[in-house]
Image (cartoon, rainbow, N blue to C red):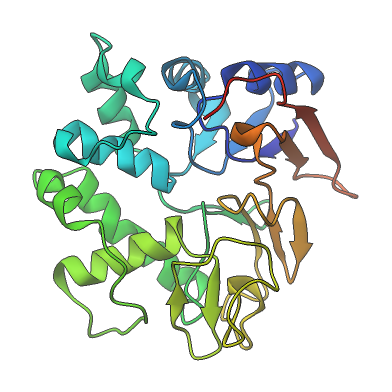
Length: 275
């Protein structure tokens, strides 16, 4: 059995299928991990959701910020932005099924047999894996419960910027979501930066990439993530970034997780429609 982790698809259905064909992916015996942002920016969000869902247990997907944004728009239409390209999902007769399916996706996936975890963006440096899983479960409970509409109304915002066990209510959930789905840089004191999107070296001096924060409590874990197209493929400090800018005409990248050495594959997305 082969296990592959794939970077941000963002509605780019054709490159996803070409990459899986290139890998000779067989859902009867292989598994694919998707680092989040299945939808938005590319032309075929609905086709991506339909295909990934059809893979059943052969696919594991965590939620990214664009996936959560789709869910928020589905509950509060005034949240939609001009650049959003997921109207095909919202107008589909089965939209409620897609929304419900997405709400069942986790923020963090951990496979103890492989010794690998997957998130969309990053982890707060104060969290160990046990605490990260517990924080993810707090959000899962809301997404799968009757108050998720209120959660999506409160989800947007950049504060608070630092973890504390004393955080509660919407502020606690917002911080958790921002870490898992939006962060790139973080201060050595653990304050997350949600403004700077460029590659390392373009951020203010007080920040470092989240995976390079000294004494990060998951430093001994192997983590795959996406979200950071300006970073590109990057393997450092136990964290592997897989967002290689498919929706922007870059590449879609897959990393084989089991076996040694790990193998990398990608396909060009330059012929894809994107916005």
